Amino acid sequence: MGKDRPNGADFSVQNGGKRQPNRQMSTELYDMASKVMLIGDSGVGKTCLLVRFKDGAFLSGSFISTVGIDFRNKVVDVEGTKVKLQIWDTAGQERFRSVTHAYYRDAHALLLLYDVSNKASFDNIRAWLGEINEYAQEDVVIMLLGNKADMTSERVIRTEDGERLANEYNVAFMETSAKTGMNVDLAFMAVAKDLKMKKTRKPTDPKFSVTDYVNQEKQSVGCCSS
Ligand SMILES: Nc1nc2c(ncn2[C@@H]2O[C@H](COP(=O)(O)OP(=O)(O)OP(=O)(O)O)[C@@H](O)[C@H]2O)c(=O)[nH]1
Ligand SMILES: [Mg+2]
Image (cartoon, rainbow, N blue to C red):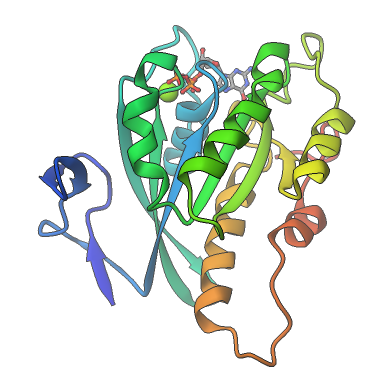
């Protein structure tokens, strides 16, 4: 079992100056660890999604744009296996792009967000997928998330538009809301489950598909209370 700090408050600088979480001050036990990166335009809700997952709270009020990169850890239980998710929250602003590029290649999964009430953030998804293609590992798990699904009257991107784009690029898709919590745990749990399956699957076992898993488990707007 490994250990790590329960939150991402501390960094040590190693690995050519790249910020690394400090493992010496570890407190929480885990069986396997995975790096997940949150990416997408500024304001789509990356930090709020992470805070909702980590603390179960919603950051309403004034928007504080992330500077550079930050991370938080959360250990989740996948059928008895403790999976530590080290979640990197990147800045969506263009001026920080070169900072975040350096982190792509270590990521096991990328949660790529747009805002269903912001057309430009959706239109930019193709450019983000181009960046992923350039900088991330070939087998990285990609999940496209249409966030702010609670904003029904301001919505400009339909669920079908997100689905179509995800199908075109063969990536998993669902709509989320950091405000209500809809599908937030599922997005991270699907990644944890994928990692566990990759590590423990025997050659004869059927392959785990993140896309099938989220399609089976996801809620749609107005479906259920969350
Ligand atoms: N209604 C609603 N508002 C949200 C949701 N998620 C985020 N917001 C709001 O959107 C704004 C931006 O959220 P952030 O999480 O800070 O955005 P970000 O993607 O981290 O932005 P950068 O750090 O600049 O890249 C904030 O005012 C949030 O309150 C959501 O699911 N629903
Ligand atoms: Mg942020």
